[in-house]
Image (cartoon, rainbow, N blue to C red; front, side, top):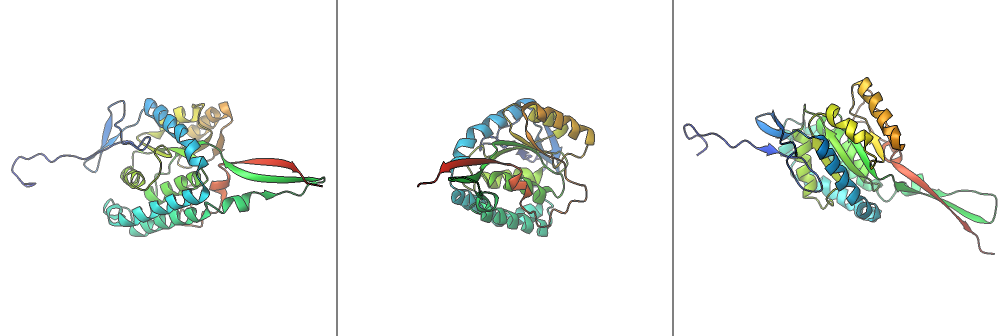
Length: 277
């Protein structure tokens, strides 16, 4: 019985989320949050997560936009089913609802962003000139600490809906909504490696993510230290990573997110083709 004299309760241990699995940190480190153990990611965990993200790029980018949208919608369905669990973790109910709605919103853009961001270009000559957006590849993300769930969803969903894969660093202050979201992702048809979540100290792991030569873009939205942000941008420049700079401290995560987060993480391919006579 749970109230037996002298009994020591089994403390839950939240692990990392890499390649669709839940490994412990290779360092064996963890820290205590709300009477639960949370993994403290290391440099080696960053490397493992990037490998998993890279391996998932081909299949995820090659999936149809319709299929990606269906999977994002499935995430929303699963999150709706676990709404009370997130509220029990201390996430305000209106934030959980906003996070669910945001998954649905981005799911709807999956097969529409190419029509808005691409198209036929007028040229002088007997040619068709067409521009089409393509995913950048592997995106490293430093997630904002607050609001823990909505901000996290707001940096993950726009990156993956267009075919990118992500490695997300979640800070020490509020990791439980993130690792619980990982449990949702693991049961929502999302292929392993598309989203990888590392909890711990971004100031320790972000430099390795920024300097990794197999990462194509860097989202620094959650970085609050200007010196760290500047250092990460310098490291990102080594292989010309696209960089999303930190969000303003007064950023309203409940506001309409717009298209900027999707389009910044896209490349544009332009094709010329002669017209028939």
